[in-house]
Length: 324
Image: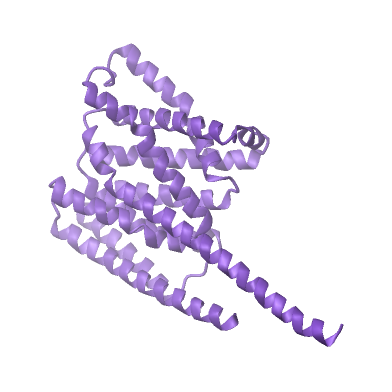
């Protein structure tokens, strides 16, 4: 090797590393935008579900599924992605994972619809406040993402907050825990399954479609269907459920593929904060002393977690600049 080539190789290596780092940074920035948009949408979505609170939760869920599958089917046709779905059917392990994510997201949807209709948006917001720390815990258990000291403290504080509310109310906050863990596990599996966001969500809604169709057929046959009997406004809202459902999920799954679970958890503060404010200021739900103590512990946990995440990100940024 000549002296010139010896000097050129390190420069080429450094240039390649800088280009790779720049690509990762751009990808992360796009992920943050997708994540922030999806959580802001979910923060405002109780307004929609409050408007259809007079419709049975299962019927609203069925219309969410049917609307989403129509919208996603059109997108898949426009981008000529349907052959990818046929390819997925040959991969048993991937399909089993998508079946699991389908169950998790359907559980999350139904629980949230029920919580808005029964005026417990406050507890739903608690679930989504807990979820960032659930993401950290799941990342530690399943992905080998190490818990730093202050992350451990934040998880302990959040556990204390949930435990206090369980003790004060004589039972665990079921709605909050179902929402937190169903969506946390959904994000975990969608991060590990190597399937495009649009294709994966299409498969999930297709798996739910026969169940949704069966339910709608049953309530139509029994004469108890709200659609077509509660006025034009209700019909329009139910027909809009697909857009309400599909758009933020597409944004979220795009974010989940680009970001660490801890970063996704950090962005999720947007949604529960907006839901909490809606519950108190718009829906008039009571905020009791016991809830205040529980929320204070969880908010403290999130504050510690946020500060630790910010400090760690700055440290990594300094190290990367130094390496470059």
